[in-house]
Amino acid sequence: MEFSAKNFNVDPAICGWEPTHYALHSINITDPLIYYGHYFPLLTILFLSGYVFWKNPKGLPNRILLSLGIIFTIWILSGLAVWASGNATEIMFLWSILIHFDLLLYVVTFYFAYAFFKNQMPSWKVDLSFALLFVPLILFGHTSLNLAGFDFTNCWREALEGPLWQYYVYPVEIGITLYLLIFGLRHIKAQPKEVRMQDLIALLALICFLMSFSMGNIVGTIGGNWEIGQYGLLGMSVFVSIIAYLILKYRSFNVASLLAEIIAIWIIVLIGSLLFVEDITIIKSIAAGALFLALLLRLVITKNVRRDLKQHHEIEELAKNLQAANNRLKVLDKMKSEFISIASHQLRGPIASIRGYASMLTEGSYGQFPKQAGEILERISQSSKYMALMVDDYLNVSRIEAGSMGYNLTDCDLYLVTKSVVDETLPIALQKGLLLVFKPENTKECLVSADVAKVRQTLRNVIENAIDFTPSGSIVVSLGIDARKKKVRIQVTDTGIGMNKDTINSLFDKFARARNANKTNVMGTGLGLYISRKIVVGMKGKIWAESEGEGKGSTFIIEFPLLSGKAVK
Figure (cartoon, rainbow, N blue to C red):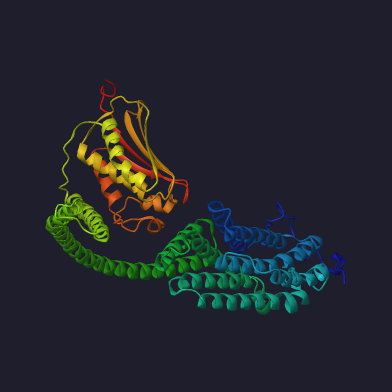
């Protein structure tokens, strides 16, 4: 049935109604609580939803909360216009808008909860189910099933809701609230214990948000007291504040701090509102609310301070225990380094004897041996050589960690040193079937301040490392001068197994080896490059590695500061 303004029996002589200002204000509304109950939550929710969206426009919960703020704004403004207007046609139009946005607010609140908990939208089946809920509103929202009439017995011309509200909209809204509660509890039950409290607070805030909103319609319809709805609207601001805080601080907030902040803000709001209220009854109500919140804040702060003091004491005890453990670890680490150093020194003598006797036997100093025995002697010689190198590595590590690595710095010609090391390692490369090439940019002196022996050790380590991890192909050693940066750069480029980014990042760590290193060389200790970096850095140089990926070869770069005025003879 179509609803028309002719159904009203309005007697202007008895119940006159002054025209509205800006469609929202009327001098006929004498209770300031109506405006206070509408404008304050409107501004609070709109500001908070806008601020949350501004902080992260791409966040799904942030966007839905902004939509919720816009829907609530339309509902609030429409409701204010209904309170202020005395025109039946306008009220009927606004009433047909209110019924849609009333239900839409519940639906969007559920969508927000779903996005907040799961960070995604519900399935299309849920979308379709909610869409179907609006079909009766579209069909009957403009009829007397929505707005039955007005009660002019007290000249307040209160709206008389039709059965569409009482028998459809309100039951559906209660159903959505219960569905949200069940969905939220199931989600929280499946979450880890450390995040359940945050999710539970969010769920309770959303349920209280909808319950506060329902005070403006459902409770008013049942109890006949529409003024109580204004307090419900005020309560919505509190719960939206909690929800906004949770979005901004989700997974990293303290419940007591949250409660204290919300209470403090509302005490300020209530006290500030006293400046705009003249009715002594409302002032007393506001003062009572502020007093209650102040007492609650005192309890929260007291509990928080006690907990913080207890935690501070526990942290002090832990710090003392940690310091004692750290001192003990330093002692143990020093003992370990000393043990390795002593053990390594003790091993060098026997290993040197093994290598010497193996060499003499191989050379025939004690007579000729069968061919098979010669092969075994060669293996002994090679094994003792690797063992000696490992012992040297452990000794160098112990010296580095003890801070006793010494450097005999002199004017070092990197061209001569690099050429010499390449010549020494060339037979090793040829024995493996690899091409080792030295390509200097020029043959002029490249003088740096360095320890010649340690530069040779580092270069030999890097070149032999390239030989070990290059199954086939070539190794190119280049030398150049960067006159602008005043640096001498040595590059060792191979066609070997290459490295990924993760390997490069950890390559110079102690005991570090590439993931695919064991496929080509199982003898490495993972200390060579660690020692090389420490040595180069100790001589104020730099060393690093580059690679385009596994199977694409590697390049090791060593840089030393060029001695001023000594680059060229």
